[in-house]
Length: 151
Image 1 (cartoon, rainbow, N blue to C red):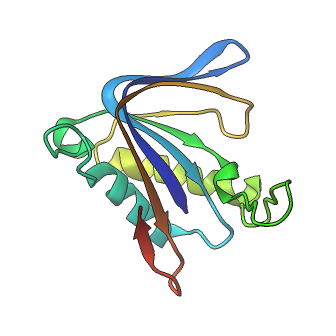
Image 2 (image 1 turned 45 degrees about the vertical axis):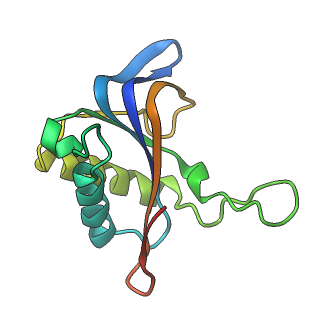
């Protein structure tokens, strides 16, 4: 599982000219991609990391502030453009696998106390944000054979 976490003053998702999710910050916009092996361990780790990551002003976390989150599924985080000019998406989990993982991530964040707005899974979305800082962090949770990464 990969996530791009951005500290924002506001963020919203629009689908077919209708706002389907929005937050007023300070808060976090979380773009998340799932791969084939993602499951409960990756969901738990990622939710905890996002919620407790101390990237808000004053070295505080979203949990410390009760900051809202806008979580958006983005399969292109698993695009591979190492060869040629056209990315491949083979590492991205297809919707039947990734949508339940996405839903579980949002539910786990809510169980932790987060106010979670969501993008519209699988839709062609317009994502707007006012990045604060800017602060952007890449998180990745590998399966049990791999390791965790924060970039």
